[in-house]
Image (cartoon, rainbow, N blue to C red; front, side, top):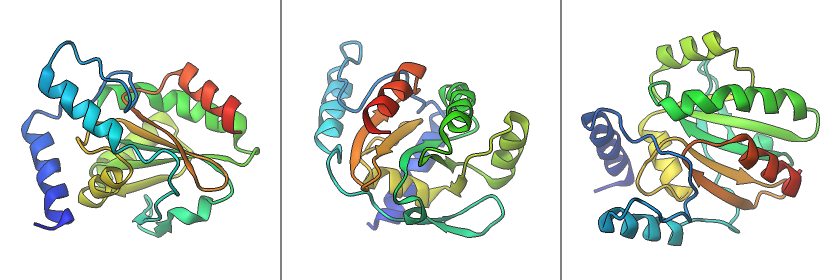
Amino acid sequence: MTRTHLAAGSLAALLALGLTACGDNGTAEDTATGGDPQADAEDVADAEDTPTGDARIDFTLPDLDGADQTFSQWDGDLVVLNFWATWCPPCKKEMPLFQETWEQHRDEDFNIVAVAVDEQSATEQFVATYGIEFPILIGQDEAMEIQTEYGNRIGALPYTVVIDRSGTIRATHRGEVTEDDLDGWLEQYL
């Protein structure tokens, strides 16, 4: 089975589960799952696959206008790469924080690139409603495959990757990003 088929299967599985793949606060290294041995094992395996210290992975996805955007165009910036969906409550909650942080630091070689694992029309409506100005890319199966390559084997959303100015992955985070998370990353890498 190819990666695309696996990614499509993962997306279909998420949809079949009632779109409950949204995580709570936590990093890929967090293994506290309320005592569920299978979930603990998955989190430990996911932590082992975390690409921290690896070079960023390049990819191309369309933006909201349908123009292909290559991720390498943000090389030289500290990038917070976020995989999200409009139907995901923690994703919705973190977007205003991302917008505020992006506005405060966009002139400091900092960017947020959000990859919507969602439909084009739903994403366009969300971006308009919430006034999102940072780069938004669209992908479904392709986005699922990309986030897997960035260490998110279980496909939970939101999933965030911090990439420093030299293109090195510095952190991964499964679940909602908080102000403390963002402040810590900015303090350490900006």
